[in-house]
Length: 335
Image (cartoon, rainbow, N blue to C red):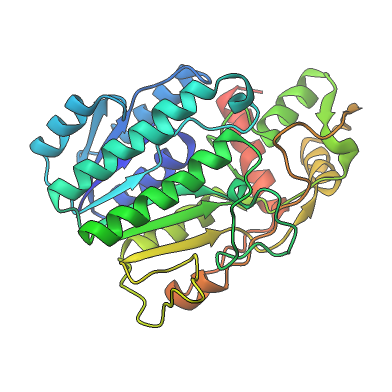
């Protein structure tokens, strides 16, 4: 297939693009190389992708409708995977406009281009953050998620609603993927594992929020990519059993579907830190802090729908995932 991956210089986008290329697909990777974190890291990811003859890079922003139209005119995409977004819960507290521009305006442009180009399947990244104030565990795609607690989460929930509208009005098959705390080699420098590793090796204290009383459904990058690839090959169809009397948020009378992609295993933050300490052979100095605005104390994914529909359950143990990250980190930074 000929596939557009937006956010291809990003963490998940890079890994997905590489997997698709290795599977024999041709990939156009779009990214605007925003300086939210190290642009050099993004360029180094792209350098890896440029080793593939079937990879083409387009430097552009989703917000630039003219450039996006030109890209869809120049290529006929079978599928589009939209991973480009302004990420980060805490950053959304101080830079809300970035989320409005990229996650709302930019996603609207993607929907319009996919609609007019007759794309066969649009996959888009949502987030576990959409569960917001929900406390029923594990988080299920069948639950209502109308109480986000950050603009980042609200923008991802909005993406789900926008996609459903286009699916219903124009028959555009759309699948939303709620990712749960993704980690692994080539990861984002603003994420906990990267920050902790960097600080511990430098002898600096690590910041432990909510005084360590946090749990996360950490999901290894290879599991995320495997889930995306399997869903990619299964465009959603209308659910004939869907009822407006008891509406199920995860499906529709339209060709629309939502999935959680998580490890289905909530890990205590202190256990996560201990596993990292063992891998590094060092003990972290810890600075305990309160829960940050916009954060939730626990995430835990119900992935039964993913198992049922595409036969896959993420299962990489946290110890193995951390070892793989640390091995990459030491190689990348020559430590």
